[in-house]
Image (cartoon, rainbow, N blue to C red; front, side, top):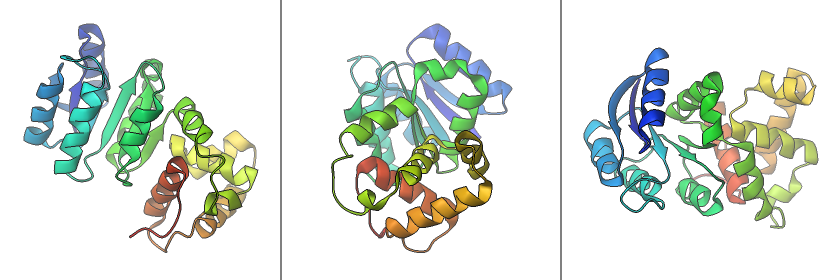
Amino acid sequence: MRVVLAEDLYLLREGLIRLLEAHGFTIAAAVETGPELQEALLTHRPDVAVVDVRLPPTLTDEGLQAALQARREIPGLPVLVLSQHVQQLYARELLADGTGGIGYLLKDRVFNADQFIDAVRRVAAGGTAMDPDVIAKLMQSTSRRSGPLQRLSPREREVLELMAEGCSNSAIAARLSVSDGAVAKHIANIFTKLELAPAEDANRRVMAVLAYLNGTAGKPS
């Protein structure tokens, strides 16, 4: 699996390169500025991009904007962004196109190798990998909205939050101390309440997560 990595801090960049290569990834390019990132993404068209939000020359949201621009030119390009802090605006921009293959992790997650690698693979496969703190921040601005999301029970919301983190059914069952069958039933209810049209289960999971994080729901086009 080919990765384009963007990180301006030398030691962290080299550490990520070694970690990814140790788990079988190929580094197509490792860059440190926004313009270099955009060029690398369009040139290499990787299986996944791992991107620091803040890159030179502006050190604001240069990395995120370069990744989003490349994603507009390469629809569905998987992007996992890393940030020091939760920025709701950044998360909203990442979610805006309503497709999967996205992740937003706080940088301290990088130091948990297994969790980080799992997140990279999940995003590359078209799923989501959202930090729990990012989910909580997004929910602050969507919890009062009306519509299908309000039909979800508290337990169904818990299940959706764990789906957004990227948890499998068995992992959700373990976290909530319920059976796999109970989780499957909750997920089926979620699909129905969010009015998601029949599709492959993996796609419906992503659509449910995106509807939840965006505070919207309805049949995908």
